[in-house]
Length: 294
Image 1: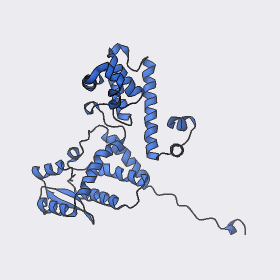
Image 2: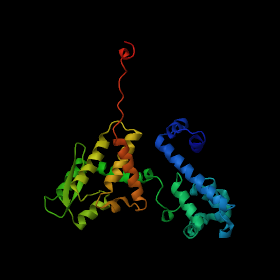
Image 3: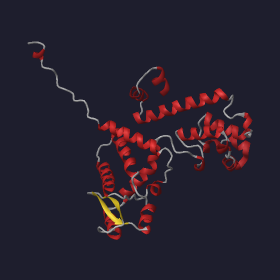
Image 4: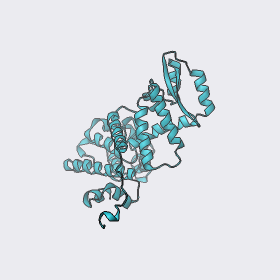
């Protein structure tokens, strides 16, 4: 439907989102997924007669499994519990299938499965075979946990952290983004292995620059206090959030995200923020009648 509305009927994405009764950001994700799958599988079937090429020598049970997984877009757990798969494999269905998924890494068909997995609306491969999700929004689950941890620290908890790990102007030091219920600040703490490891284990980002820590704390504080949130405000917040947290000294440790496509995601966020910062066109009032009718 998304492809038909935009490509065939030449509707704008905004119009198509209204027709399908879904949020614009969600429509964009659906449209990009549809476009990707259409091109990817068209190319695949131009070269191969079947979804799983016969010359790979994949066992029958795997062919049936992949056909249900990709052809019908069913969840792995749903397929493995079905009577059909139980009849083919018996009680060890899950162990046999996932254990022999080695061909995902060793064949060109495996690349197609991985691409399907990263673009699909739910994951189908075990984590060790997964590529990063195609949509930055999917990464927000990990980033949101960091945000929620900061909010979960009480005002007294923040005071204890600052008292225990704080330092004056004595280097080496890093900066802690403090987000309390009534204020935000950047607070210097000692840069020791014990302290930085503690912050990383508890998913608290720390920064080498005071201005970065303060900007991050201010962003989280303002969004927490925002009474009415919209799709636009959320998108703007997460774009800023991803850019700012990337400057954290312990970014890799607190997020656990793979570095693949970091540059592309960062570039897209910066492009979006630049577009919303452009001055809006001023709408003038109604022209006076005497200008045309003296």
